[in-house]
Length: 113
Length: 114
Picture 1 (cartoon, each protein chain N blue to C red):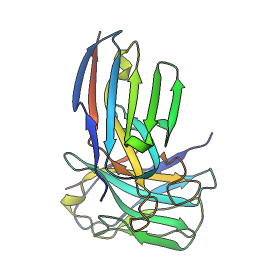
Picture 2: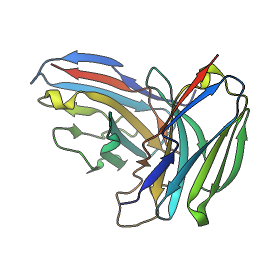
Picture 3: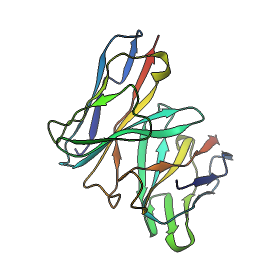
Picture 4: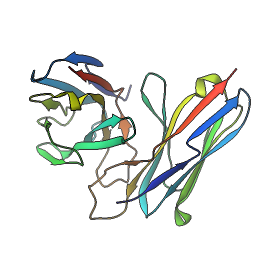
């Protein structure tokens, strides 16, 4: 099946710093989403971004589908940004389970005050 | 407010005692699915449903049942829970299957089987 790799696995920042999280995938995709899992375990939709660039406040994301990667940018990080960030894709492979999201292992972000 | 809801949010039970985790969405979505999240294994799909009365297995269906009698509801049933089903469970929905639509996740149900 499709491989989804996220880097770095862990990231520690001081409040106010900027960061870039990367997601590489091994095959063509129909769908790519970024999620934030907060310390209580909730998965929060950040972006639905199968291609192009989107921005939402201090967060932005870019997906280059032809080169099979996506980037999540966090600017002026805050302690509330802490948690795990997941990239998830739906493969374009018609033989795969329809609509199944394949998740990366996540990036554990810790922001210190 | 558009949302996916799950109940209960937390559950501690004993081996063999049947339980049901409910999932409901108010967005008229056709596609619904269940995932479980385990440390080191990430999120894995259990079952999915493309519409009413249409369900199919995901990657880890053993020990679980689902039903889709109404479009908005997709309960997950554990007929005889075992400790290896201790996990964090998520329900998700999207407008249509095929992966061309954003998927929305419920808040999660943390299940412990003793």
